[in-house]
Image (cartoon, rainbow, N blue to C red; front, side, top):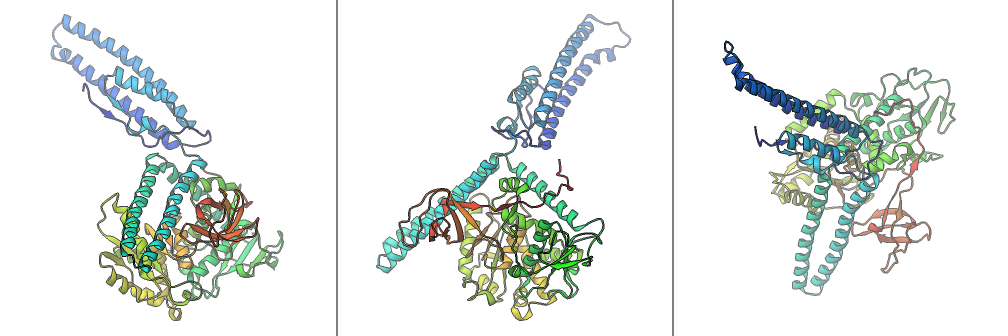
Length: 610
């Protein structure tokens, strides 16, 4: 056994300079106890082997007297046992201190070194703690997580700017009959794109190497679980006849994505007013049987909309039943409409997620869109039939009634540019067996066109779903099944390419946030930034000053509040400086989102998980 190397891997512990005393790291404690348990087993095995070796002569010579050699062996055994006793006491000391450090959220390097000394120097077994000795940490600070994500977005924004400027120069080269210049610029564009891909990959790899992924997963589950338990409490009052209620009519004159967003708006209003949501879905346009034929009921105990008194919004705090209008007709407008986030959870949300406003909306979608077993079975069968598996990019091409009214036409080539970017980036890190794309559209001609123009890609999708999504056949059972499949597959893709002007695209993006700790960067919109219909103001704060030097730009000082209208994806965003009232373009990297943090009910009745 001399010289045997024992590897102890403990990826739960990472380096952390600013340890916070309130962090719970039960996983770290279990891992540290596992290490010490393994060490104790090694000591025990050494002790058993020693006893066997030292007592073998006694077993072979039971009838003979003890020889001098045997007496010497026994004497040596006693000495060894005394040494083992001392080592056992040292291990007990380490266990006590190591456990105490883990419980307090701190891992003392001296304790780790003492463990090494005991196991290696005295037992004389070389020890490698691997990740543990290099990454003695708890969890990242909010400031660290925010800055890490800002660097990632900064790399994207600088490439948007450089790419757009080079494309302008290339166009000038063509216009001025300078093909060599245009060719050179294209080479620079190709090389620059590779640089961007490598930088983004390195940033993501660095994020994993620093050891906080386990915390992100744990915190995401814990925070989501807290919100879901609050929603369950809200929706299941002990006595429905006495419960305060908010009644919402599901039927709204719009498509599926719009109606689901309408239901989520009602749910947010119910949470903010601490009223049980009663969703009236009789004769729902998408299913005559109502909401509960597709999704689980919103309540197990309270679906009766009746009450002692009734009023239209806003009513009073004492009114038992309040009827809620569509968001377009809401007056007065309360402060907790999207994109507001709750104050009591805001610190955790901002620390965890790159877009906490979308994460918050996603939590309501998570509770609303819990499938009935028959619906889940249908989706599972569709997934299996089309061999849906990762890696896959979800592409949603919205045409028909949107084009020319709410959105511009985008060719399939525009979408595929970003699909190619995703796979080029992935292939820098690993071998990709197939470039797989789930393609959803309300235009049945898109899927055949894509398959013909891009034979190197494997396209998943169903033309019949696209036919059912047409305006004339939108409100049928087959159309509902189709839109459910499309949104499910888009949300479960690794990356989403679409137009945020589409309700379906935004809904898939919202659901995607519930499937990952942070999926805020797993998209590319060809037009709008994320928004929620009927939302309150979307504001940003200037973090750097800027002096306008191009036509169309506006100046700003650090600290100015900007009302953002959109990101042009060329390094510039458009908005209004609320101090100067000037409207125009400003560099996207010089401003960050200003979150609307609002006092929601804190739901003290629902305990925060330990």
